[in-house]
Image (cartoon, helix red, strand yellow):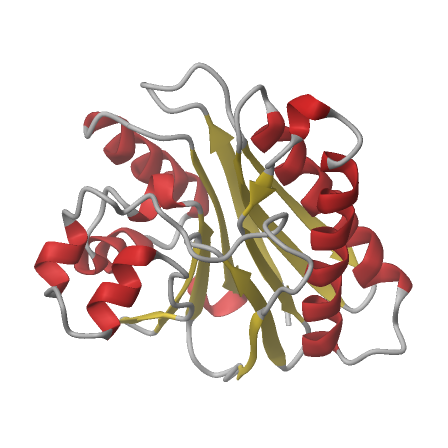
Length: 244
């Protein structure tokens, strides 16, 4: 299976620095993409997100005895421990934390791990699925029936997350495996909330239908900035050969 991808991370129009970190790694048996959105003052969020990406990548390529899904979860937990350890060494890094979205694609399947309110979407043919569920205060209100989806989209406390790397040693990681159909077009979007917060789901689906990744990336960034880009915005887009 031949894959194409593009990724970007930019400072939002109302931010002075970028606490997101992103990278894509072409490894022997597939493609590994990681998006992290850091939290914490004094550049601590920037340190947390970068450390998370580096640790997850290192763990994933060095622990081949584990299956892919378990390896992703273990890699995220390893990054969590690393962030907590590093935060204890410097007072200015106390409380640093980050979200994590991890996706690995081999010849047959996609494997993911998720912590926080960054997201993974899958466009299969023309249907968009939100693969992950936010670990956020607003999502909890929505799940419990206290607010509607419309209220959730505009809630003033959307930025409060309930789970993050660096928060505590005991970390629950959402993970899963998606069987990929070689005969169908698919496209994955991994993104920080600086992307997902400015679009409705239907808008994400329409944007992702563009086949040329360069054009798609340009359109995505252009639309985010036209809406004020209130936060840093980071994304990875991966598609299969049939999407070209």
